[in-house]
Length: 84
Image 1 (cartoon, rainbow, N blue to C red):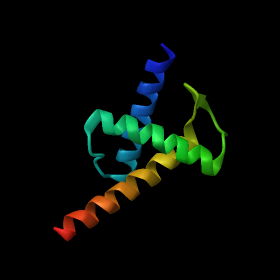
Image 2: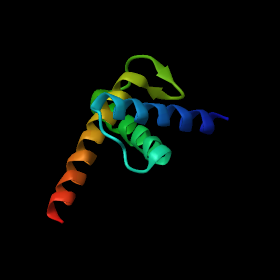
Image 3: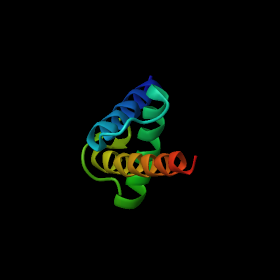
Image 4: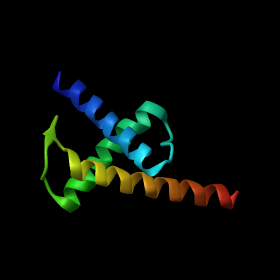
């Protein structure tokens, strides 16, 4: 059950990051989950484990990391589109 809860929270974090940035994350729900997990890892690696925790995610650093990840992915996707 803990794994399913982590998937749900990771998806919500990725979805919130996409809303905050105003960019769609490629891959739909799976993309949101991946962005949430990778963003949470990135945010906690840089900012540490502080703030409220849900399903072993420090929410504030996870959202900040996911926002940075979405910005990077959208920048890279835009660069590839211009190259075509």
